Amino acid sequence: MEFEAVIGLEIHVEMKTKSKMFSSGPVSYGEDPNTEVNVVDMGFPGVMPVVNKQAVINAIRVSNALHMSIDDVVMFERKNYFYSDLPKGYQITQQFRPIGSNGYLIINTSQGERKIGIERLHMEEDTCKQLHSWDFSLLDYNRAGIPLIEIVSRPDLRTGEEAAKYVEKIRSIVSFLDVSDGKMEEGSLRCDVNISLREKGTEKFGTKVEIKNLNSIANIQKAIDFEISRQSIILDFGGVIEQETRRFDEGSKETVLMRVKTDAVDYKYFTEPNIAPIKLSREFIDEAIKTSPELAEVKLERYKGLGLNEYDSDLLLADKDISNYYDEAIKSGANTKLLANWIIGDVQSVLNKEGISIKSFKVSPILLAELVLLIEQGKVSNKQAREFFTKMIENPISPKKLLEETGTSLISDEDTLKTIVKEVVDANEQSVIDYKNGKDRALGFIVGQIMKKTQGKANPGLTSKLVLEEIKRR
Image (cartoon, rainbow, N blue to C red; front, side, top):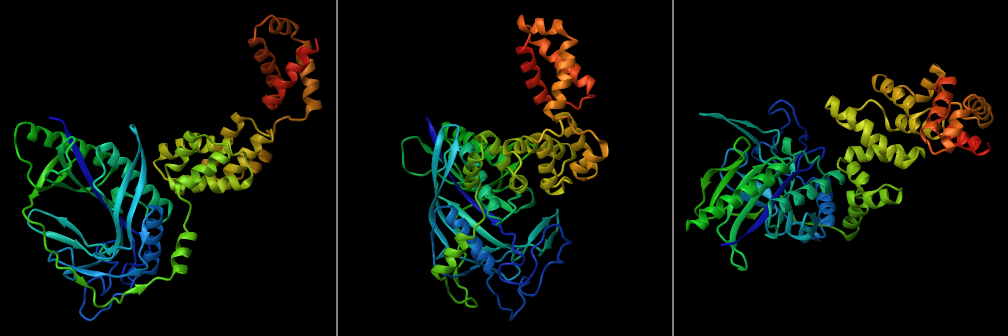
């Protein structure tokens, strides 16, 4: 029997606001446990929540990027359940009126474009972080109250590849909008998968299995692919799929049972009494959208207009910070293609070798652009530029200053070069004959002799051009 997977994703995105969703507590990562909390985060009696304005702006921007209808009334509910990750005994969330609804996302897969429906986007606060041991659990409340948006897809995904592409696109959107850093390994973006199988051609859904807390895009695809295979084998042998929650084990590359579900949990939602409904003006919504940072797909079109091909553009846009670095560099007026080549090649090589991000890279966009301009102006060769680049990595000094200190400026004056070219060609008449007889390497020999005579300071491009002109005159 041939089966079809029905997949829906729930993505939680931590927002990188300065303060938490309903308190003035700071938002940070990597601080000592329980040092970034206040009385609101801890649920002390009598404290009052206050809605984070920037979190609302962020939610509007992401909703707009996902082609969603945006609700102009912000309302919150209490989601009541008793668990150690909730200091208050409830979570403030948006259950009945999500700020964004009925959207979609276009993804590109190996099978072509797919349109994936998105049911809702709502705001809520994060829970605390739990560290479990065999006989006790430790609670870190630093994360409690951090603003979240939850993005719930419709069950339109069919393969692990599609799910991975969908999450990749969501991560790109929230990163380029500066809503979140999207770092799954740090928990800034977390994903739960709901997956069931049905006989191909039927409409009725099968029994749903949930896979919790997937921490990388690669693992999302692997977990789904394994789960499709696991459920298919069970159904082929006449078995029954249990409604359960599973996790992905990175070592075995398999999903592992966490718990069996029986009935849906009743969370007992009711209106948050301490936050009155907030009416958003049309001007507020429009301003949030108008002032949104550029999305990757917008930058892609802009880069094409700068003369970059799609391959180079995609490499730059794979990392928001690298894209921003490039945007700063091109403000200098340096050749856009040459700059892209340097960033994709030489700069990325250093980042990979040293295991650092572009934010930790010592050579600023201005200095790199200055180096590229020297190449364009014929003042340094590519070889000299790479020597300068190596020095700049150790000590981020201006390449112009390096040029002055080393005195290695290229000879680009045509009259000076013409004299040298004539002398070298006169001394190598046999090479001229060889070139005219079809031996192209003879041209390289002549250029090499000129480089030797000028100690490598002759402008290579101009030298080759002048040598050809001189040969044609003979």
